[in-house]
Length: 423
Image 1 (cartoon, rainbow, N blue to C red):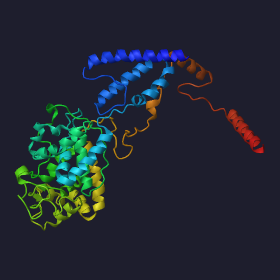
Image 2: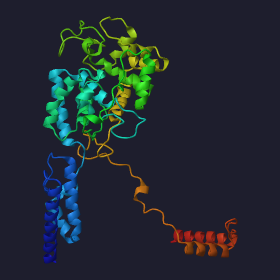
Image 3: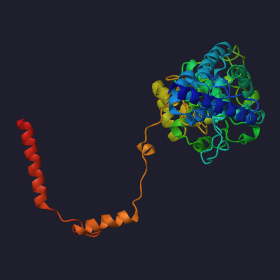
Image 4: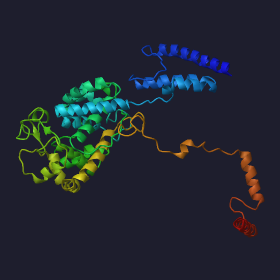
């Protein structure tokens, strides 16, 4: 038996060598290694692992325990678009970046604008737009609505270079959610695993993002956000993120060059903010718009309409009075926005907060594990029909009830129960 195991292991090794040679011809830059994966391309790691498992399946099962002990880390590969451990490390680096540069508002905007191009009426990825990392390309950064976002990309690029196992799509959304949380906002229930587009040709056309001063503010907001699959409550909740940041006239054409709240920074001075404490996430945006008492605070047409449109006003009034309600609805809306249009690997995404290296478990569906229906042969169908008709039944006539048989069954069951209880 020992000889058979050694022989089988040798056969597996030989097969592995031949497959390695064949694969190296297909992928000149990659060698097949059955060692613990590092931060190399995740798809390539999956390819390597599948080759190894295929080799093992060719050998006798007696050899598998020995191979599994040697290469256990390869038997269960984790093939995600982004590396979960690198994502968690990147989040810590983003926190430090926020502390030193006060870039919370522009990070929120970066994540939003990458996801906000989504069109629910288009199924094909990445034509449908959404959170796919396309905003890193110059052609999309030059869209008018994205003015200034090149600065956010410059801040994040060193982190992206440091963590090559993280996609741009995930990094943008990670930075956006982390900025909200670090500014005092709610915890965002994020998931990760977004795939990146690969070329500038995959960027969406200009015009999918909202304008600040359209002729019909309420209609414009609904046109843009309904196209994404969002509703009135989510429109108002997401608008509340304007509690962070400033509008700079040289970028958007809106706001004052500076105010008493922005002339000294923090960060680069200037611009006009929506709130007094424009680096603190709370519900003051709704309170200040409702009051309209301070000329140094910005109120855009798309802000004012939240208290003018009857449907929007219901939620704006609620959030002005109840910060907890605002935080709850905002966290849900932000998470939903961050997932729009994204293509996840694994398909269900994964969290970096709980079970960081495991994908979210897929719900059990019994039908997926059934053997499926088996069609009876015509001969069997005819035999069953003949036996059924022999007992007096037919397709149009059910079998007659045998009352005597039913009574005997009941008596037998009672007798059995009496016997058991007596014992």
